[in-house]
Image 1: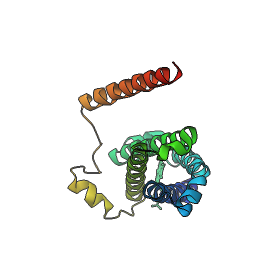
Image 2: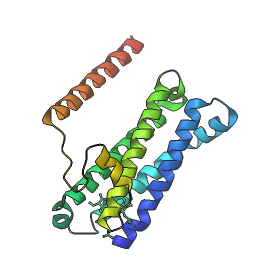
Image 3: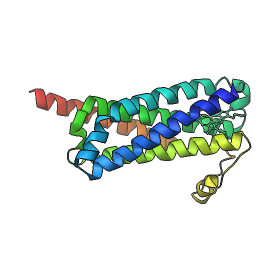
Image 4: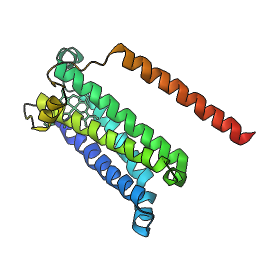
Length: 184
Ligand code: HEM
């Protein structure tokens, strides 16, 4: 299955990188080219997310689950892949459900933030995958410089998880209150 995983990962890498460029272009331009590119964004993101999900699922068939989860590098690869899949799925939902309104006001910069974060996570996932196949790149030097040694399991303090959970609840409450305010 290794060959299939390696073949498949090139789809999300290419498609989501193009989607990131399209989002950056639309965020800074209201011109005809940016609008035309934006019309292709939902299908582009949809194919990108589906191909990420397929590459993700096949990833679990490359080595046994015991083998991939027994090394910090393997665990980090799964973690980064899960974040990547989740972030791009959120971006797809936001653009799909939000329509062209996502480019109004501040929300266009939220789109830029999500796209850049998603691309960084995709790059980290690929970098760790390269380490797993024995073809490491210098990209991990950048992660080391930021304080993360990729050969050690990535942990965040419990407090970070509480803050993320709290922020998610606050955002849900704000969204529901805004919706109620609009329908009232
Ligand atoms: C967003 C999803 C994923 C992406 C973009 C991705 C990307 C990559 C890349 C770029 C490589 C290196 C390919 C090469 O050097 O030619 C790789 C290798 C690998 N990935 Fe993933 N991966 C993803 C998800 C997963 C998941 C979920 C697992 C396991 C649970 C996994 C397991 C592996 C393994 C075991 C290798 C090494 C394959 C070998 O030994 O040849 N990947 N991955």
